[in-house]
Length: 323
Image 1 (tube, one colour):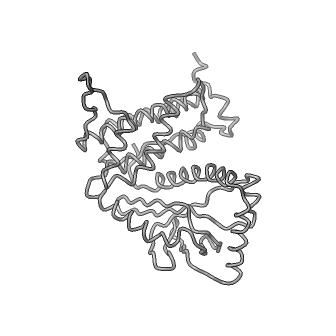
Image 2: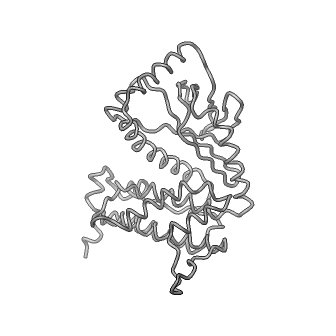
Image 3: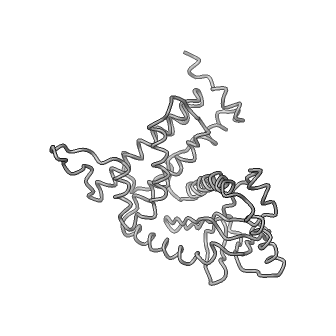
């Protein structure tokens, strides 16, 4: 009986030596606003407990993801019912009525204009569900499956999904305005000034904007210029993605300025000095020599990590009560 309550040695191998350190690193606690249905909130408590109990049996960490995916399916169905979307397909030729699959329901929910911005996040969740619910073989991946990162993604989706209609419409409008305003900065030479540094950047890959109870976050996944193009792409020495977060900001024609999470000034602006232009030219010349497959591999490796980092920042900085 006692072996059920002995720490799994796998966690120590992974560098986590105490229960407290394990909980802090791997257990994701639910954070939901009052508009999220109680059934979802209560179900998520179970997910946190499964994560916590995997301290004694490592494979249970995968089971937390299985439960999280079921909760996401319940979430979509509850939202569909709220939107008066029928959960059933029309009768077929024999009169049989079948349930709509999850993919169809997600598409119909995200067809609502003010919820369309969630489509890419739902697609990520849908891909996880397909690989988990239809595995090629029995097995588990533990922390390599990024259960904690995906749990934060799910929590963030749920919180956005159940905002009131007025707030969602306002948010959707703001998101569209930002997409237009930021387009001039997405693929061009700029200087990023932050943390007492000035670095040249080739725009940004993607952005996310979140707002809850006057807590605004503009996150940009920045693409720094590098003098080590071959090392980065061909030797696959991928650096951690550079994510910057504005909590207060103004977007002008040629610059973005504001403050970061610590209240320190941060800005992006044009600086077309000759040396900067030469660096930009050299960078693009080196990049043109890289194969499409190496570039594709870099994108696969870096973008997913960047998106998870973004979700973690959103999760940690949303002023929502813990459950």
